[in-house]
Length: 307
Figure (cartoon, rainbow, N blue to C red):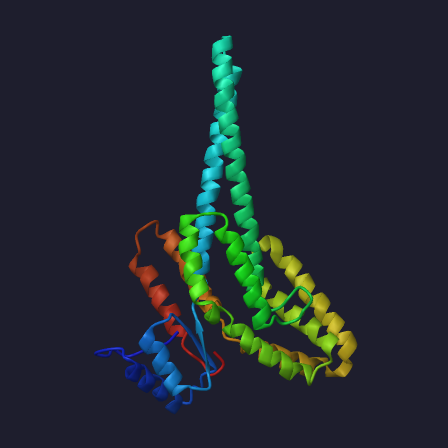
């Protein structure tokens, strides 16, 4: 999060001068996570041509989950109608009413089955999409850009087949920015090649899995936090058994390299996670106390040499 001075405009040159000033104050940028502002991106790349720029795709992916919530509400509404149709059918007092209400129930039942199936399909595909954006596979191998690209395209096609107008709009945007989505995996691919020259391959896979689950420890809810802690400790123990006295040094190296991967979604989600509980507690009215807390957090989240 950059704390910047007020300027008359925000052209590429303004941003270039801003990032150059940061370097003069000994802030060396490994990369930047931001939106796709033309001037911001051009200015950053002009000032830090060797650093990575990663687009924020957190909001686009979150829009897909908004569609999932809509499908969930429709499924529950269809279940209520089916239940009401069954109750009405059971109270029929004549054969004519029985036939009419049976047809009504049959229609409600088929509508409910379709709504539930659509929700289940969407939920499964979005779960697979979220896993496709993980930096490593369940086997501990860092994902390659080519593999992620092909997997995302397949999932986009399957989501598109659900025939949701709201989802199709978001998918169109994601397809246009597919190159942005795979930038972190290009970074991961370069790091993987570097680490495999220094760390035994099997031990590296174990260390990557431990790093992966350690991140989930901080993100997961209370019900799943313990399982990720156990997974992290298990894979660390496996790596320690293979590396012996070299474990501490190599583990620190792997963690430091993997932590340097720039991911826009992580930064945006972190800020959202800090602010959201206080916005919810306001019940629609933001108090001065809440604003002060938000401002204090944003001032703390300044760019650092390792950001």
